[in-house]
Amino acid sequence: MRADNSSHLAEAAQQWRLDCIERVQAVLESLGHDGGAVTVAGVAARAGVSRTFLHDNAQAPLLTRLRDLANKQPATGRPALPDHQRITTKSHETVVRALQDVNRKPHEEIERLHNGLAMALGQLRDLRRGIPTPRQ
Image 1 (cartoon, rainbow, N blue to C red):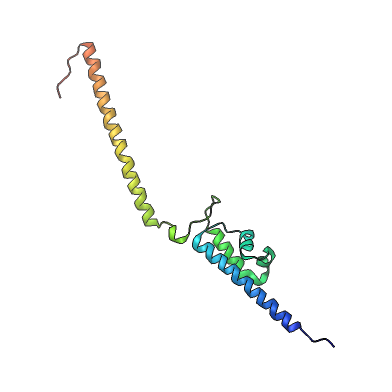
Image 2 (cartoon, helix red, strand yellow):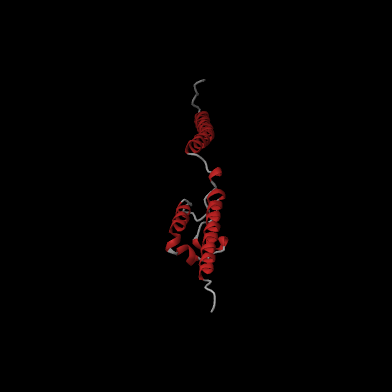
């Protein structure tokens, strides 16, 4: 009579499942920290598991976490930046204000030069017509 090895097989299958879950969690953690494209196929390939494994109901929390990471990515299709490289709203507003100030200066200079040119052209026209121009 053969020995019943089914308990060993069940234990090995359970250990394999836990190893797969651990690898997927490590990949998701890496993607959340370092950024990168988050897709079921990409995560499955990096973790060395099948896409079917990720879509199994037993792994619903992993798939939910994967989808949450994917939803944080910009709609441009580019991977999201890692958390430590993302700019805060306050910093973004500061940069925008600084750029607006830098942009305002050339526009003011152009406006000043435009007005000066208009005055000079007006004076030139008056001189050509023989009309005396008032001193400034």
